[in-house]
Image (cartoon, rainbow, N blue to C red; front, side):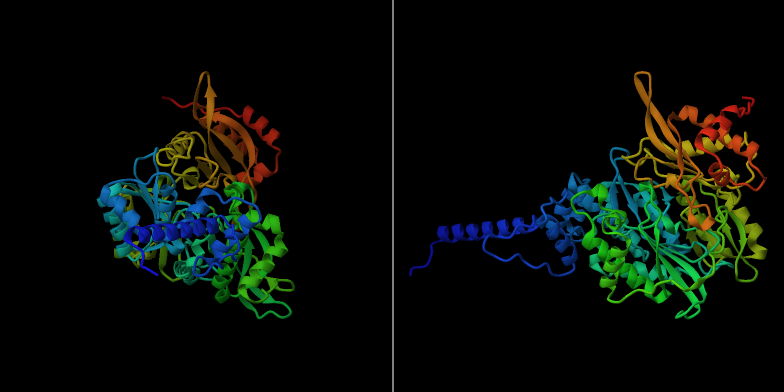
Length: 594
């Protein structure tokens, strides 16, 4: 048989390549090649690919994001990120989503730039890291950072050509942004006062660090159908809002019970997603601290295996649990874990020490004699690079060089000696920041808003500050009250758990529309014993009309509470919404001289 000539070889090579491409495409869509057995997924992406295959085999169609992830894992696209930076280009189309796996968010049209979100386990930084992030934000970003509601930092206004330089600067500080967005496990939160809190049950720092590194070193933790949140509550004074997470670990003491060794355990909660009106449910499972990380891995794998790959609106853990049922999902977790999990039935549990809604602000004594932590007020979470460097110097000179971010969009400086509290406060004030604030400003939480997020329908940060400026001189509020402003249905500021929750909306005014909000009241979280979803109070309120509406509502609380210590939450839950509206309508507005 004569050898093929060059043109025949080229034809055969193209023919074989076409067959291979067709086979790959059919595998992506879950269809077996005629006459051949489907390939068994292998490697670190096997769990994700098997879940996709089951979805298509059942007649479903993968959403575009799942198809894109299947074609090439987003974590393997570093060369594309570098090439775009070298060309000075931002991603387009599906690449916008895929680039979030590197922690880069192209936020046009709100800003024609990237935002970079970090991963800071338990929200704890060293002074030299804070200083380095300030340098990076100056060199490659907008000269500021935002503290998020996951005790994290975001750097904004990053140019296309500076994206890789920013990522490398972050990595040089011993930090990472890998998997901080898209279909991944977000920053691991823990008690902000871990290790220094007189009332804490356990120090959450080692667990948050272990969970963080577990994720970074297990590729299958990135193969999820949607985002995922994990929090460890150690029983400290500052709430971490673990009941709003997909997995919440709640520290408790077991004092007695048949078959239980007295000691510290964690209650396992699953399925929290307050933007979809659900707190995490109690599984009735108790875990020893050393079991938590592996159990969390089992939960994530069960979610990856059973999460919806065909409908992103129903792809969060809550919907898997709703579909399978609580008990059935726990069985899937036990199968992934490889052993039955310990049930809490029969155990005597000590109640969680009560959290303080204002514990993240001001000077507080630590468990270490003669030491204190100082909670700063950051205006709606924003901090300039000059302030970042200044706070790093305060932490280094007067403390242990430690800065602690909180889910309340502020930070704590720990380990300040009694004798240095005054000079530390003076140094903080010299930076234009404060350690005390009115009850209104202490509990002010706002997402990025439409100044930096394409989904937001209002300028939430600007509106939050305006509300504080309006309400403070008019109302003598003497108890903590949380006002949460969120720009869209993603509910990054968790409006359903605020005393007052505001979600942005466009409001018709004549032939035009203006920025406004839907108003919700009476929300709270478990650690303060005020767990409830807020109820709707008013719809489509233009922002110009919002400050007097809130003034009347808060005045009604101050005038009609049954005792001076009745919180806004308790007042709201004691009345029907219609009654609250009637009381507020009768409340007078405080007239102020111009």
